[in-house]
Image (cartoon, helix red, strand yellow):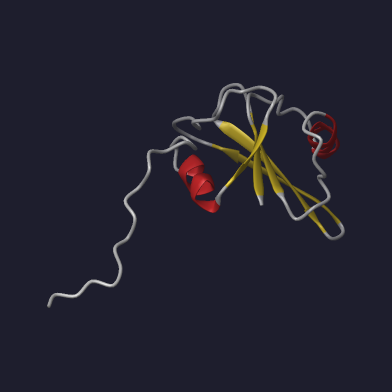
Length: 109
């Protein structure tokens, strides 16, 4: 599972600060098999918090050009799909218009 912390997060926070944010503000358990993503005010950097069996992993990514299309709602942690995660990492919005569905079972005759 992947959750994004909507709005902007103070990225000076480390593992303990981000884990506390997950627990206290969003009332979620940071000790699960879940990636929590946070974005700074400039929207060119994100941090990820992930619990492995014996400790936290803290991920950090800084874009050299461009910004993330990060949702602005301040009080929400939103679960996103793998497709929405890819869109976000590619610079697109999480909310995309409905894509065309693949056509299956076609026959030329």
